[in-house]
Length: 157
Length: 177
Image 1 (cartoon, chains in turn cyan, green):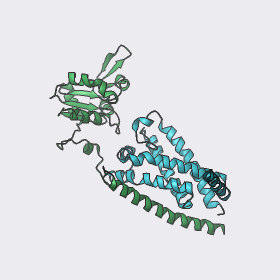
Image 2 (tube, one colour):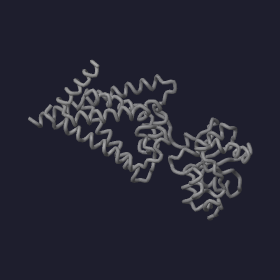
Image 3 (cartoon, chains in turn yellow, brown):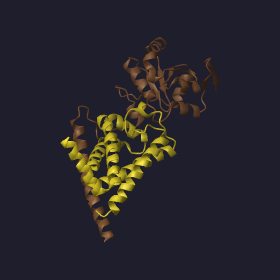
Image 4 (cartoon, chains in turn brown, cyan):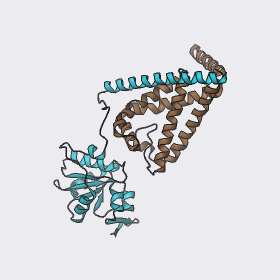
């Protein structure tokens, strides 16, 4: 009970400090990034295969991309939620969302209907969802990231 | 004043980004090193290198070699795609062994394919791994002469080689040269 009141107090303080929308956007994007990282960290081999299937990176970068960026997603997710390194976290998150969206649109345009690998490394988990849906979903996340970026950089704090 | 504030925040974002990226790289690399099945930092990802048997012999077969084997009935061709995809069109000499339900086809495989037969597996698409998975399973079952025709259906179809489609529920096969 005391802890719940403490948490409520912390959220109320952040709400007053950041504003409701930036706080909500940070919490949503933070949760999304943490969720997206877990399966990739647990199954790096499978994620490396997903990265390879995108056919964008040279072979030499496939495994490194499967090893480091999932941890980047996890750390960014935590930092977004607790509000640490806000400018840097939001900047990288927005840049990553641009890269993810760009990669998907690139493959959509060239007709490669590949497994997205955004949240799960299992092929069958997303086989019925089209790339268009992935693009739309990532577009919404990017919109959220851009709004957050502008509120942080153009805000008075 | 406002410009100063944005410049200050941009500078802060730059050094913070550096710290976050370095931290991620260190944690990611250390965790990978600590795993029982460490992922090599650099690996060969070409289909040919992935499809190399323990004997270091490539499992990949060329389109022309496959065409010859099909014409001469020198190999058993296995289509690893779903029955629906197989029905819509397949290599004329191919049997359907869907990798997704391979266990149900085990008896058929053992009955149909002699131990010393040449086997060619294929599926469709540059990133399709069904034929690769099927080929590796067949090798592990003891078949020694297994080959994979990469991106098989598309390449075969585009080359104008003989194909077959299954017409409606009666499973009547329709040949197209």
